[in-house]
Length: 112
Image (cartoon, rainbow, N blue to C red):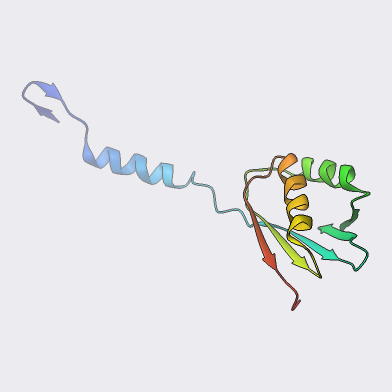
C-alpha cells in the first residue's frame, strides 16, 4: 500500500504475523511447592518433590537440590506446618533465595 509516495505496511500482513507469534507465548508455569514441617525441637523437614531435608543440618544439600531445578524465576510456594517462628520461616526463605529463587509465597498450612 502506498500513500504520499511512501510505502506503508499492510494491516492484514501485520495481523497474520501477530497470529503466528501468538503460538510462541509460553504457557504459565505451575508454581513449585516446597513443604516445611516444623518439629518441637526446632528442626524442620523440608520436602521438594520426593526429596526430604532436615534443617538446619541439611541446609547445604537443600540449597544444592534447589540449584539443580530449572527456571529459578518461576513462582515458588513454601507451605509451612507446625509451630514455626517467623525467624525460622525467614531462614528457609533466605536459603531459597540463595539458590536463585526470588518469587516466593509463604502459606500457613496447618490444616493439611
